[in-house]
Length: 259
Image 1: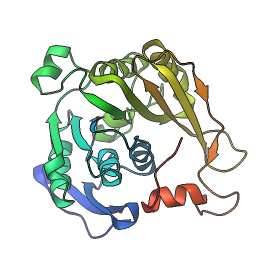
Image 2 (image 1 turned 180 degrees about the vertical axis):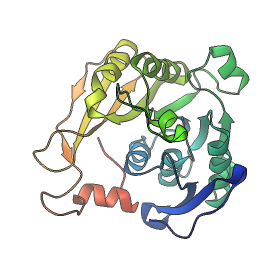
Image 3 (image 1 turned 45 degrees about the vertical axis):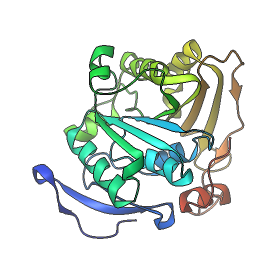
């Protein structure tokens, strides 16, 4: 929910202040272009409580990472994005929510060459959990807004670079979790099964009996365990706009995603 009117920000952008987790988090994000929502909350809520070091690739304003860090008071977060305005907002959001001492924000192209990522401070084999909500894989027309287009569109080759970076930065035994549109599962699943074991896929449907609209996928670096396809879960009740109890609790900040 939006808490106030847009306020001035660097480079004449405007931002809104939005509440997440039932008000446990209040984050600034651009009023136009890509805006964090349910996917970011689900991604953050899916991180294992045993994790000590988290990397959020393409963090935007930091929503997913801050959700995970709110659930886990000992979790240290490293947030990486190539957008300078987004990283500035992420730093501000960390400080304003009392997470600044546990947060490192890096200006980095997560699909760039290894040397460039290292120079930006992105370490290899360093994180218990690596999460991402990559740009959508699509063959459609790009959005009119350049920021939104860059944040929401990706080809299969570029998507694989996200997975490759996640594999390189995760520690041995670390978890890699992505949230993605269900219709683009094929390239994502291919990249995960090539690099990780114990891959788990959770399909999410809008309502019971409907096709999946998004998926959560998790792989474990170094594991040889087989793939698991979980039963789908519905975000909403069969009728109306209410969330199903499991997801209502997640979005209110009173529960994590157990999967």
